[in-house]
Structures are given as C-alpha cells and as structure tokens.
Image 1 (cartoon, rainbow, N blue to C red):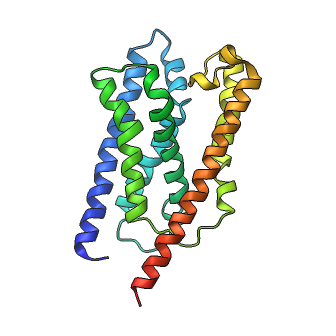
Image 2 (cartoon, helix red, strand yellow; image 1 turned 90 degrees about the vertical axis):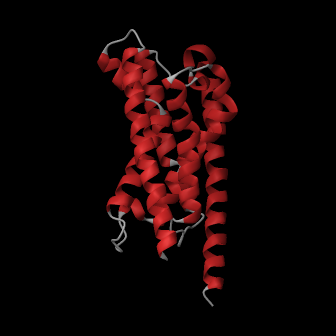
Image 3 (cartoon, one colour; image 1 turned 30 degrees about the vertical axis):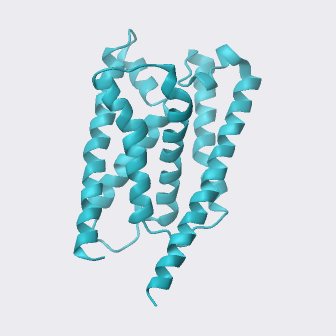
Amino acid sequence: MNQKHERANKLLLMTGIFTGWFALITQLYLIIVNNQITIIEAVTRYFSYFTILTNIMVALCFTLLWLNFDKKEQRFYSNPKNLAAVALYISVVGIIYNLILRFTWQPKGIQLLVDELLHAFLPALFLIYWLIFAPKSNLKSKNALEWLIYPFAYLVFILARGAISGFYPYPFMDVNTFGYDKVLLNSFYLLMVFLVLSLLLIWVGKLITNRHKKTRF
C-alpha cells in the first residue's frame, strides 16, 4: 500500500468513526427525548432497530481498523469474511430504507441529518471502503448461508419481543397490523434479499481479487 493509498484509507476510516458514533449517540438522545416512554423502554427500542445494531457494527469496525491500522495480523474485525458480512448488512439497511421506508415519514432538523447518516452516508461509505480497501480473499459461496444467521436471529428477537411488548420497529414486521402469515412472508422475502446480495458481494470480491492478482504479474 503506497502512502497516498494509505492516507486515503485512514481518512475514510476517520470519517466513518466520527460520523458513525455521532449519528448513533445523537439518535439515542433523540429517541429518549422525543418519545413519551420510560428511558428503559426508549433504550430497549433503540437497540431493537436493525439499522442501529448494524451501524454499531460499522462504527466499531471503522474504529478497530483505525486503531490497529499498522498491525498485520488478521483479527476478527479485519477478517475478509466478516468485513464482507458487515458490508452486506449495512447495504441492506441502505437499500430497504431508501426503497421502502424513506417515504413513510418526514424527519426534520437534526433528526433528518442523523437519518441520512445512518441510512445513506454510512452504508455508502462502508461499501466504498469494502470495495477499495478491504481484503476479499477466500470468500466462498457457503458464506452466504452463514451470513443469514444475524438477520434470522434478529427476526426471532423482534417477533418474540413484539409478542410481549406490542412494539415492532418496522411496519412490514408489525404483527398487530398484518398478522404472522404476512409478516413471515415479508421476512422470507427479506432473507432472500440478503442471500442474493450475499452472492453478489462474493462474486464482486472474487472478481476484484483476481484482477489484483493479474496486475501483479
């Protein structure tokens, strides 16, 4: 990695760190002060959003990659398979929000800024990082099935908590409105989106890796 490439890498990581933690902390504050519910319930709802959980992954990943930038050994957060998984999850956040959820409300002021950071800027930033800087070696088709564990576990958690509290973070998962049959069908479609996008990322990763190998000779 030449110095120019290294500086660009560090700048992107720093941008992700500051925007990521700013958006996450500000969103926690907003959900506490803008809702007539207890702080415990507000915090619980905050951590019930796939967007929040996935952006926490992104912010942690950016932070750990920057703190250990010059270390050569592979860690959990720098493993090609795990970086691709995070790229998958945050890409789905951006796709689902901008195609389906963006038109269901009109945030304003600081909420609008945070909304754009979490659903547009950070998904795009991490995908750019993954495409340009992240290692992509040894990605395999079987990884696509492994990457379904997180969204599936999230689905189970949301349905279980919703059955108790009556709160569902996303309209297409609202059992009170649609019933279990429709919600489970919606969830199946979403899992298919994860699977197809996983295979696409694996293919792109292999394509980029092979191209880099050819340029070395």
